[in-house]
Length: 378
Image (cartoon, one colour):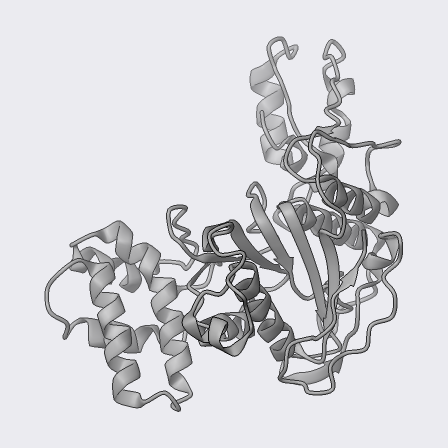
């Protein structure tokens, strides 16, 4: 049984009923990746496995084959204050350069998103002629990294809006996973209406044509065009699955299709919540919003953060950090609009565990511009 750290009481009782003395039973899991307590999962069940099945042999897997040494070291430091594995160690099976884990600060969520888009463009070596002409990228890295190798992770789905807008403005294709209904996303209704008027062909082609038609009709300065383009990106994975079947496409949206639809073949940046990233891996991971109020998450009117909540939030950070194979770029905003209010935030206290500790960082003075400093952690 895989992911045993996420088992809930009902699953546990069923397992005990069908497993008998446990002969032939194998449970695999990492309690430091237990992040589904809000769904009823109980990481304590993982800790009782040896007592429940005294004949079991415990094998501790300490070798990491995914991430380079800098990422493994930083992730182990981040989880250390709340680890559920006494004396936990990790040995990387890979070699890699230093300076692959960085921390950047921005004035607000829009500046953070703009910095991420600009950095992606630079890592790609310039995704457009404009990038090369403006000097934002020099083209030297072109071809070494693809859009599909990059993911942007965040704690709450509300963070995705500015990120999607910044990537759209930069001309960087993306796909987003969440559990929102497609029909409720801004711009989707507009695309669907225009889609019905498009000529025949596969659904994906019709979606692209509909977005282009709306953008042309409204003009580049219309603020709703950004939402329409983002809606097009959200609709494309479903459109590709539906092929030429337009009625199926429209029907799935009508009956409540979710935006939780990633196409692993798509040449696009992946946007994911930290929960949605579980089990996935990417060459480059941006982890946005590493700040007070988001990591650990605090909601308006909520009571004091319990030790259990804080520990699970730290495990969530650990999960996000360990999605990265080659580079991990952490970022935070000095201020962020949440729940219709502008709030002072700043870096998360969780980052203090990463040594050497990040030095002080001054946020950019211009709130809509990307952060202009990058600091090396390791």
